[in-house]
Image (cartoon, rainbow, N blue to C red; front, side, top):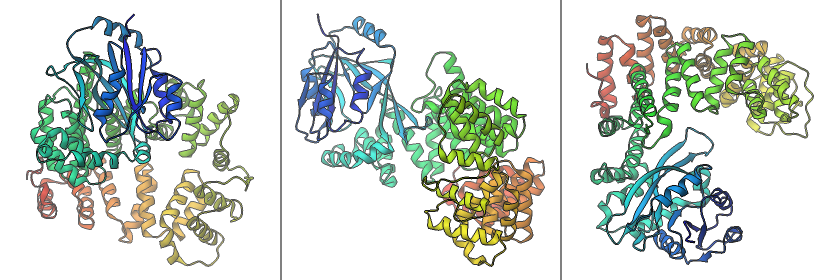
Length: 631
C-alpha cells in the first residue's frame, strides 16, 4: 500500500515546540521525516519518539538545501512541510486526506494553505496576521526548493500549478519572545548578506524579505527595501498583499501619512472586496483626528466584511482582524470620544461577539454599563457572553471587576470562584478587602506589587503594613503619609514622583477612598499631576469630576494641550462649536502635533481652520498633499 502523506521538517533546538507540532499531525500524516541541522538540546530525542526517520544535516546557511534534503527521504504521494513552531488545525484531517486521494496527478502541483501568524506577545488575538504558502505538494521528481532564505518551490518542468485550500496552519515563530530567543533577525540578515548581488538588488522578492528583516530595527532601510519591492512586484505575486500591508503600516508608523494614504487608495482599487485597506484608511484617519471620516470608512469596512462573509468568501487579504474586530474597536473608541456612549457600547458588544477575550474592550464595556444599569442587569448580560459555569470566566470577570473598582461585581464573582473551589491570588484577596473597606491583615512573607503595597500603606496610614521594594514608591508613600498626617513636607519633591502619585490617586478614586483622594488632590498634586488626573477622568467618562479639575487648571492658566483638546471636544459634543474653537486653537499653539489636523478640520469654523491650516502646513510641509486639507 502506498504512503499517502509524508511530513518533512528541518529543525534545530526546537525542544520547546516540536512536540506540539508533531502531536497536531498524528491523525493526518503517514510518515514523518525530520532533518536536524545541529541541535544541542533534546530535539532529536523528542523527534525519535514519533519517527525513526531522523537525519543529521550540516547547516550551511541555506534553507532550500536543508528542505531538499528532507524531500529526498519522503516516500508519500504527497508532502506536507511544517516548521517546529507551527501546528495544524485540529479538525478536517480525514477530509483533507480524501481530497489528496482524489487529486492525484502526474504533473507538479502545490496546494496553498492558510497560515495564521501570531505576532506581538502571542496571546493578544488582535495580533494575528494571515499569510499563505505552498505547504502541501505532490512528491513529483522535479519539485525542489530554491533560495537560501524564504525558500520557494520550483519545478524543472516549468511553473508548479497552484490550488488554494482552506486548511489552516498556526505559526508562533513571529512572537516577540521567539524572535528574541532565537535571534532570527541576525541569522536571516547574515543569509541575506550572502545572497546580495548586483543582479538581485532589484529583485522584488529579495527586497520584500530584506524589508521584513529591517522592519523593527532599521525602519528607514525597510522603507527603501519595500519601495524597491513595490516598484517591481506584480499584483498577482503571492507576497504582494503582505508587502503592501507592511509597507503601508511602516509609512503610518514613520508619520508619512500622505504617502501611506496614496498606497492605501491604490490597494483599494486593486482589492475592492478586501477589508484590509479600508481598515488601514480608517486607522490612518483616526490617527490624524478625522473622527467623522474614519467612522464612514470603518462602517464601510464592516459592510464589505458582512457581504463577503454572507457569500462564503474571505473578506481579508492579510489581516483577518481588519474586517470586524479592529473596526468595531476603533468605532467604539471614536463614538465614546464623541459622547455617543450607546453607540460605543454597541460596537464593543459586537467586537466581543467576534473576540470575547479582548480584555481591554471588555473592561471598558463593563465600566460603562455598570454606570448605567442595575448590577443584576449587568450580571445577566455578561452571563450571556461568559457563562459562569466555566470557572475561568468567573476568574476573568472577577479580576476585571477589581481593576475597575466595582465592589458588587467583584464580590459576586468571588463567590462563584469559591463555590467552584478555585483559589484566588493573594494580591487579589488584598485588593478585594481594600475595595470592600475591610480590615487588612497583610502577610509580609508574601510580596505584593509595589503599587498595591503603597496603596495598602496609604489607606492604613502605616508605612509598615506592607513591604515596599521600589525606592520611588517607598519615598512617595512617606510623602503621602506626611501630608495625610499633617506633618511638614517638601512640595518640590512631588516633581520627582508624579507618575507614582498619579497612579495612587487613580487607585484611591476608583476604590472610593474619597477623603484621601481629595486631600492629596488639594494639597499635594501639582499642575502636571492635576492635568494627568483630569484627562484620565475625562477619558474614562467621569465628566463632572474631570470638568471640575479642568476648571481649576484654567483658572490658574495651567491647562495643558491634551486637556485643551478634551475640553474642546466636550464643548463640541454638547453642540457648542463656538465654545470649542478657542480650546482647539490653544491646544495647537501650545503643542503643535501633526496628528491634530483632523480635530482642527472637523472642529473649527472654516475661517479659523483656514488660518490655522497655513500655520500647520508651515510646521508640517510633508502633509501638504494629504486629501481633505483643501481650504
